[in-house]
Length: 407
Image 1 (tube, rainbow, N blue to C red):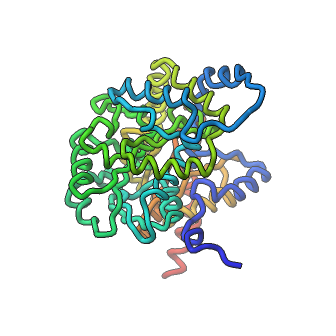
Image 2: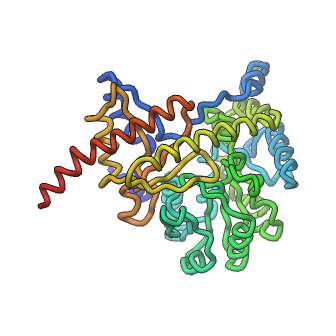
Image 3: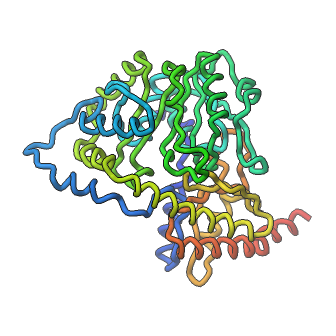
């Protein structure tokens, strides 16, 4: 009995692998502040639940493989408000942004072909690329430069005969980096000139904290219609992660046909979730404004608290709801185990996502973390205070002992 090479190349999710240890910590009476998963706590718009309650079909059947027409039209209308005109066939509904990514990589990659991705990046990209037999060529960044990556020279230096695509997340997960219009144009030009797909994960589009950037989307560049693939989702935008509804947007006809084969083979996305998701697109723009302002306040709290901890390196994220930071510890993976198993402050401890799995390059990110600022303000402040105390005690108890052992 043998497990596939592609499956063995995949790693556990760094956001979820500590779950068994968290359960044990909770059994021991600890309260855990979860900063490890991008699960928004803001209320899902009531329109979703109302649409589901009103669903009255006698039989709950399969929906159309490309997606429910009502939802596709809702997505088209949403993009029209961004001054992007799409045809129905330009949109394929998927089971969340995750399936959109998986089907995209299955459609464009052959064994050992490459995708250029700035690191650190969302770790599940690794799983999806490896499932398709592909290879990630990491575009290096670092915390001291604010994780910025939009350099033509750096990108083009990674292009080989095996390169199939460039992939970016804008705004970024885990870094919160937002590209300027000029940087977006440059990356679009590189993809076009080298005849590469440009995959843009834009699920955090509404969470851009510098108003000069507007609402970023690569879809405004019509000269890259054949290159461009947009990954989108209702999960973060509408605080509806459990709905599991996303989409792939592309005007490339050959890619549409390839994607549709996979859509047909998995039959359809859940019918009721699509009905609810279509209703979400009817919410007033005030919902986005309120959500963004709430996350902006939380960002400011996290960054301010982190900057008060000696030895932390952190830049202010300009989008999404994550911050990547370098901590003054030897290994954040080990530090996370220690926080769950051996530490508490008045019964409280904290979880984050250790940084190494966000990198393709071995050895990078060992002392970095991703923090998702998805807790209410009071809990977020307490969580950051607990983290600061944990770092201080870990340095005294663990790192000091190691230093003496080496001596």
